View: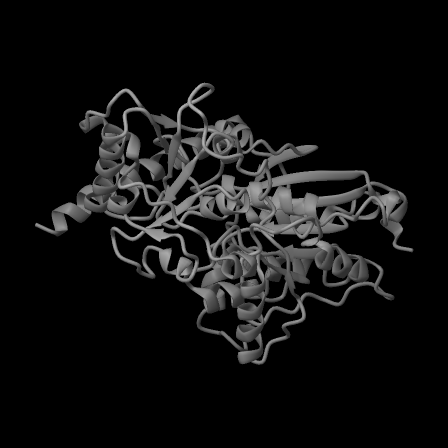
Length: 452
């Protein structure tokens, strides 16, 4: 019996943005042992670590995510590695979820390999993707190789992930099929009768898709035009973040600023908040390629993936080819409602019938339980990328997190033996604010000047 079987299951989640914190924390809950099969592990302690960087969540973003933890603190990569090295005995973790961009996962795998080099009782390391994987498939996957469990959000992703690993001669046994952890909520009950609430159309905005003013202005104008065309409807622009906040992707042209130059009708409004709560009152979800489409499909809400700007890899809507959800604003204005292809949605792990979604995480639970109970403990972490297989790539990935090629901290790396004092905290906040100002204000101006 694992040493941790007689105490609360201890899980740590390291995340680098609000969206990945949500994915990591909910994944930790989903992959925890089933109380019916492992009653001694039903109590879970979740410790959250937020990787300091441009997208570190603000308190408002954390509240909007709606996921709580027993503890939550902001750390640098070196500080996190020190914490993981010091967490031994009763303070050791059973599971560690790396909810990071690919380069961050790779850096942590090498850093953790160093701090755990003499430990067989280390935590099970889990990683994966926060949503739809439509770009940098090989790059992102190989950067995640080396974790004990690499979660695939659908049958289609699991097949693709294994093919990439096997294609380069890497061990593919870590790939484990699950589903997106934040699916759920009440199934769509049908259009309102007009007495309780208006018919509601929601456009799920994305921070970086599309990535230029012309296309974003076009989408906003079409949404406003739909509101004017249907004054009896409520037309909602669902926003991810407020200006100055960052999410997983950089948003240089927030819709909040674009809408200031428009003249929307009274039935048009902007909303923030938890996506699940917005979907509770949605009758038609419209997006370019947001993961919100999968949440909507799971609830059987009519869902449209826009083709107005083309079906292109750069937009991510090519992922929905075959879904039956592709449509244009002209079609939606005329009353068209896409009908999803049942086989396609089944391969995506959404719109599961019966209790299929509830069992979607069984494979992951079984694999983690087997790894925790492995005789002799766990073997050392073994990423595909090493200084032998990728000597021109790996050192740069690690250096971004102040790590040397062997996973040790580089000279001058942020101190990991003490908490930041008041002065350091002020400097960090100022630096983060300056970076965001540069991204959202200065960089677009420079680009426009370069186009003159």
